[in-house]
Image (tube, rainbow, N blue to C red; front, side, top):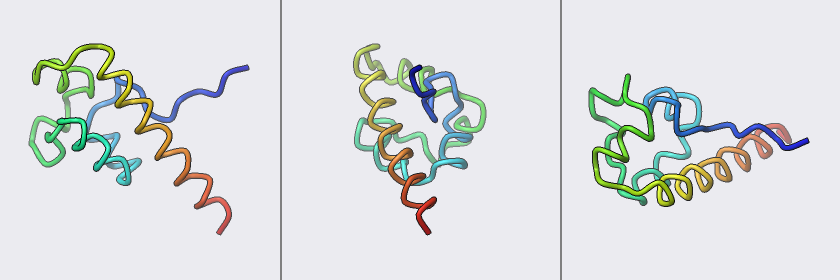
Length: 80
């Protein structure tokens, strides 16, 4: 059975950063600089990306990278 991703493109930017602050740099490196914007509280990752002209493939790659960072951080946190 496939593991559920920690982060999906349907999550708001705000909740993503609140739950997984370590992925902020991943989002910003991909051009999603809405981290501190007031709309981040209610805009999804996908909506934010689409507003900035990103294609679906780019969004999927960004979310995949964000999940890898969040998962690695979660695994390291569990070891402590």
